[in-house]
Image 1 (cartoon, chains in turn green, purple):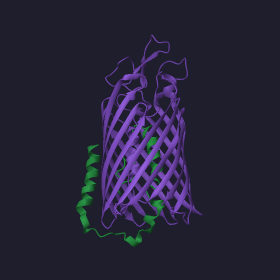
Image 2 (cartoon, one colour; image 1 turned 120 degrees about the vertical axis):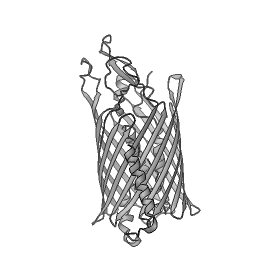
Image 3 (cartoon, chains in turn brown, purple; image 1 turned 180 degrees about the vertical axis):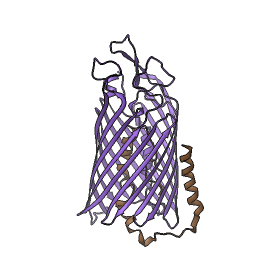
Image 4 (cartoon, chains in turn cyan, red; image 1 turned 90 degrees about the vertical axis):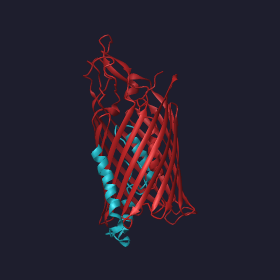
Length: 75
Length: 384
């Protein structure tokens, strides 16, 4: 699992290292589809938190079930 | 009277609660003001669990968003474990959670606290997270940490009390790839230390002196566990306003459990305010190193378990959901709302956990266990 750890942090570092030099390739005015509520990874948090609990109580696996980024910090 | 909880205690739920209270949009925008009232119901394998979950979130002072959640599980259990080794029981689990987001320019700070209580398990969890938008808001990177302290007791045994310390470390990435495609990546390491087994559960071992051919002794788990999970998600916007969802998660831990989770979904607004959702989820795991359905003799090893959640099994979930928008023109302080119904049907198929209810069979030749569960959610949401 160390490989996964390094991959995760490596990806993070690569993103950070790229810094502000990257020109946004999807302009703000081109994001109407992305902003549509049906594109949200977590449209109804009260519902997704519940179903994660249902699975976590009955499965050996745990973690990395939340939507990524956006200050979610979720498990 | 011996009890045997059919599901794990609420320790994990307290940690999951943080995800519920945290912003899942983008770091540079506070989450929407919103109130949700949900009724949940689980029915499967002789276990019924239902109750409410109420979530309220509100911005203030332009830079903050506060949230609060109240959650209850009413449990009535006559599960396979209870039927074969204990007595049916009923209990209630209650949880309160509070969260606070602070937005400053392109980064956001999240703080969370959750407390859950049941008659033999108390859990408190503190969480902190930070996220940052990069590259013209195409990328959001997040880091998170949670610390949980649990107290485990055993009903009918006033002398027993132990603790668990849980720590979660999270990294997340959300990336807009094209005008129609967004990617999510998350990685999480969890470490547990303390009394990790269920205080009511038993293993069985071959015993010629017993009429059934086997006897029971209490489970013994290691006092530490560390797990790693990584997940990748994609969401794609179709040309006719619908969304496809794809997700994969890999998992491993120091108990030698390895699992894979795969999920696909489709979301389609129908017009007239209706949106439907269909989803399929597959899960498969290998057993813990110290799990066995039947041990060859008493005290076979230092660590012994017969918890089916640690066994080799797979499950498949089929979901149907429908949402209907209401109050489109607003009403008083409510901007809009929705009424939602979500139904999940789960098939559990155990590869190394036997059903001990049939009698007269030689130990180890009983049929393998499996069951179906229905999970229903009905909730209303209001945007304020």
